[in-house]
Length: 487
Image (cartoon, rainbow, N blue to C red; front, top):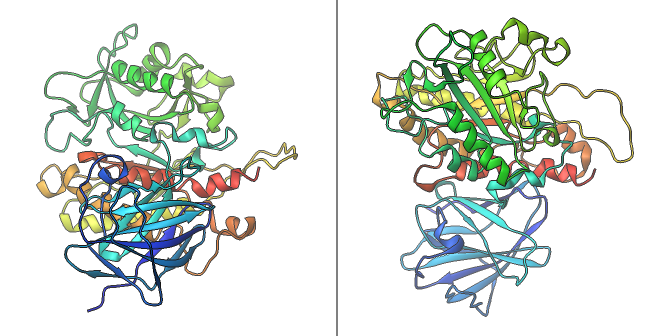
């Protein structure tokens, strides 16, 4: 049976052209740069008729021969080529693309790794590209590369924060040795931040709730401590976040805070401890009861509260309250909006049997589709508009679920199925409409939405160095950046 034609999706704001297919009889050694980070390859020869041979380039990879092609890849469009992957042992393939007269090569050399930064063939490149190849679909997606430690610097201050596609983690500090179903993360919070995560989901238990002069807040997951080696504290986590923000002042970290754990502590006590001992400095914390712009949030922690307020805190900010209000968060829901209108959430988590994972995947994809249709209001050049923009909530999408009593439904098991499924969805289906050229004018962009993902909250992201899900989410900001360039 013939293999399917190669499909290429260009998720950058610029036209790209596939110029050459290179064939190598000897698989080169893998080391350094983008080659070492490659996640999946054509395990086969690419064949296409009506193409001409040319002299092979040298450029570090020994290419036995080249085939010249010309395949136009328009921005935000998917193109099916006449190139077919075809199994052939002992050969590898590389693809050379051109963007604004600048060439970049995808060295498809190593199996079992999914993404790579393309090798630039220009001495002083202006562009950086990343590709993800889904071999079972013969589908290649090209993103604009970004520095994950400071990706927000590419977006303008006027951007409403919910317009961004933001990677997040669920029970973010639960990277320690812990009880089954308690651990949700493979990496520490600092490593998450360095690799692009900008939303933390945090659960807190006041250590001395009857004495509000003490600041102890223990990190928990439901009724359990997050580590078997002793309590871990919010104070240390906050220090790690501010250390990161001090080195990356263009960034912000959105922090969802909720009271959990055992004991008799109340939401009112938690709110007072947070206000008096942590989040009282408005230069480092955004605690206004409204959604900020990116410029207002840079170099700060933005608090989304999933707890009630002490009566005195209801008078903060001129009587408007304190922090973004997600107190009445619907439980175990596939889609619900908090009464404040600030948060629309998918948080279906009761995956009691492994077969229910497919239902969770569908709910997650549905919420991504809702977020993609949103269009944020950006200021028009030279136009003063005193009309407040329509409220755009945070779309928060939890890719997380668990069942303590079922090993196949522990967080790491569900993530092993759900995370790759969402990578595939983002690469092949998210904000995709066959035949619609979304590069043609602002009217089409408005009809289609900004193509964002909202906040996507993950388990076990970064496991064994795999940050592809984060890269895909951040890559979905490209269409918004294109709109901002017209401001």
